[in-house]
Figure 1 (cartoon, rainbow, N blue to C red):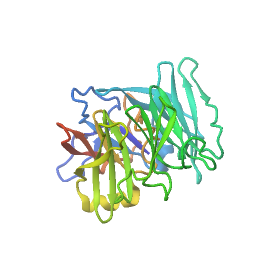
Figure 2 (figure 1 turned 30 degrees about the vertical axis):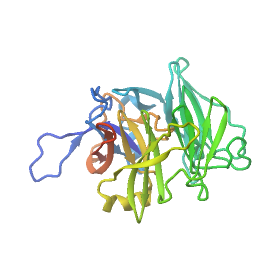
Figure 3 (figure 1 turned 180 degrees about the vertical axis):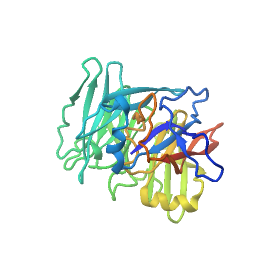
Figure 4 (figure 1 turned 60 degrees about the vertical axis):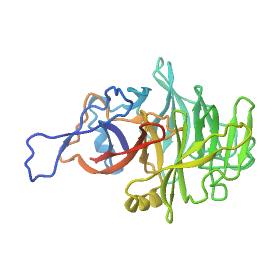
Length: 343
């Protein structure tokens, strides 16, 4: 499991020829004047160690801690009760409650929505969607104006979309809900929902044809897509809107991914997701390491304050890097590395 954390500090009294050892600080983040959080990293806790780690959370072992962005410049922390048979993921934070997902582990993982009442200190199950074989894990989701939008993830009649979709990508952009991909036949298509007219628009070719896989996210007013291909590499695209509202826009290539020779194999094996952190986007593996995402707006699991210290014999080591990018001026891209540590 991945946790968002401050960058660990080197332990004191380390000999020059020794491997560096790191000490984890509290996971509440400082304010960033620019919205680009420099002193952040990822800490990976292997799944087979979760039991040991949970016993080292001091007085916080009955709570799950998360960090969410109160503003583009600052994180705040929230906590929900820990449940032994489920993982809890905070999706959205509202004044008097948190919208959460209950993630059931196992060979056939399943998820359902629940709500954590702050005043009542209780988790309440949300009503199930009235569709056949619905599974939250397979839905496309986004948040708009405080409302969660969910689509797909079930069999049978799509009821509103033109095509039934599962494991599609959901994104909110310009007050519309975009559902992209969702099946081998539909991988290049998309459907766009306009809440003002309660209608869906079907786009046969939305994802660039060269893409073997893709990830999509929004950053302020920009809609962005990362594509990867064995032949043509990893590319970053920007969606260009047309002045005429009746015309469909198109993608503009704005950057190529760093370190293509190594990263191309990683994208082929693990895929990718783009997750917003401040004014930038982190490129993380598309597996279960990261948080359950609803349009990149979910709160990140964090190590509980005031400090997390692994059990004796468990070292914090630098494992590798992931990439992140932000915009400098206009559409100029600034790439940087985010350290990944392992316990």
